[in-house]
Length: 436
Image (cartoon, rainbow, N blue to C red; front, top):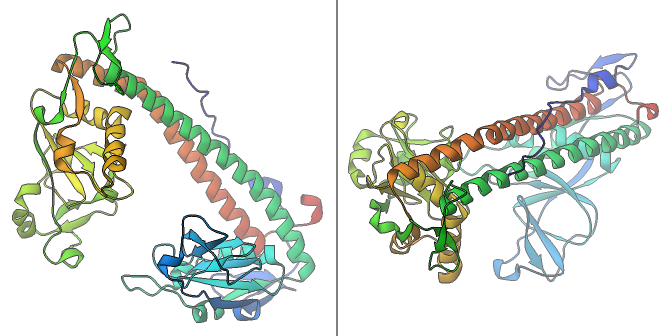
């Protein structure tokens, strides 16, 4: 298989491009801003923006297609046949996970009641960068559902240079951030290609094997096609002891602890591993009450509901004692199938297409255990399974390294973009038209 060209880590440094500072600075009297150019002002946002709340719209009025996009705190949530705004405005997430997120949109639209909107009284594009620089999420109350209000935002302070400078700064940042965003887009596309390359290796290995000279036969399954002559196709239920999920602990999220037994949820299960940075914990007593969903080394964990349905990974001894909730299925393999081979099958197109078919074919919102047990998978000797797993891991080592390097480049570019905006809009460096 032809390899993709590999990355060279090259990150631009804006400090090398811009070294000018304003001649005189003054104390802004705002700790998080520090000094600003002497001729700049500090104003509360209520003097810079007209801020209001969106209006409620009934869920039945929101359609998949329509004349006007409906904006909520998370972006477009659907379409409506009417609008409540036809100007270029800032939309600010008011509640939930996207609380404080800022986006600039234009045209006729409906702004729902879980978002705020703001009209600029100054240079629209300069104010955009000021709002991006500010972290409104920090204003949110500390309730289970984060919330910010228009009053909170109105009382926040911001820097305010003369209108001419606002225009120069906005034009400069438009140019520079467009270059950065283009590079990020290129790297994200490269990331997708690496993932496609890795998926192709897995798909071929688990359906055709790793011997290029092996004779093939018809599998008898239309969507599987030909398989090695000595392979068979059987239902998953003949390879596993268990296919079952956990339950919601008695008391729900209120019983979660800061330490104890990890309770794995769908957000913890990813194709590249188990992410435990936001894992919930339960007591040993709750863990024992949920004895049927205790996790053991060698289990394959599969998300069976929601947007992450189909994501899977396997458990090693490193995890220790753990449990799962109702959104995660435990697949416990027999000795006739290796854990990693089962994981690669479920992760491959062979597994994912069966998951997708089960969803679209039945209209269900989650995987049915009986349907899952009837998934068709290759039946081969354990020694060949081990060889296939070794082949996949060997072939994807370099790809994984490039994926990690690409992610690092993307992260650094995003940090650079944030730092550039911060330095320019706070006046720490001076932008002139010559620097464009």
